[in-house]
Length: 244
Ligand code: PGA
Image 1: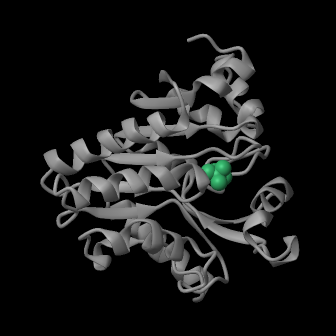
Image 2: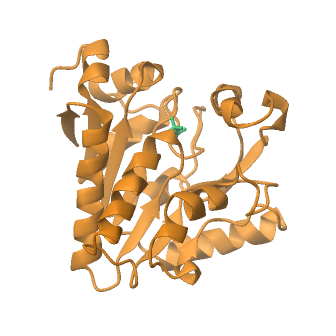
């Protein structure tokens, strides 16, 4: 695992977008694993800017997302499909047929099988990651056991709490989600996790201040990946006492 302390989150996003652009420009059929969430928004803004300045085309790129709420239609403004279309897909020249976000409003068992098959047939060159305040990765929530494969999960109370800001009320946050499993995530050739904000301090302490791997902090499994980059901004590094 390589850790890069950046001067701020904007720099973390620029550096991550540069890695992604490099993969898109150098692979014949680039496949990117994508993430939603506040942390990722500026990464997508950087990619859109590169596209608008004619430095990047997504024509040959395929994408697979980490997760989706069960029950939300693609046009629901809190669905992860909506997020991806809004922040990236509708602003670049990607073919929407080459983008995969699990479909939230169909039979969950059928959709889970389709998601698993998609992951098995679509190896990723890269996976973008945020981290939850409780250390979750995608919707792999802290637990005595984790899953290797894509599955449907009961979203942890702490995550419902953290995501309630996007919904009219906490009760409107869906209780279950499709998520890639830890094994799916660790199969990507290269991973980049970005962390910013005081609410990520606990998770980042477990990531950076010890070599322990524990299902109580799913993010710690990234320590076992041979090509994982952690971008942490200076403010958060200072807060947890990480000096590099
Ligand atoms: P955030 O979410 O980027 O909105 O903080 C990250 C996550 O929960 O994985």
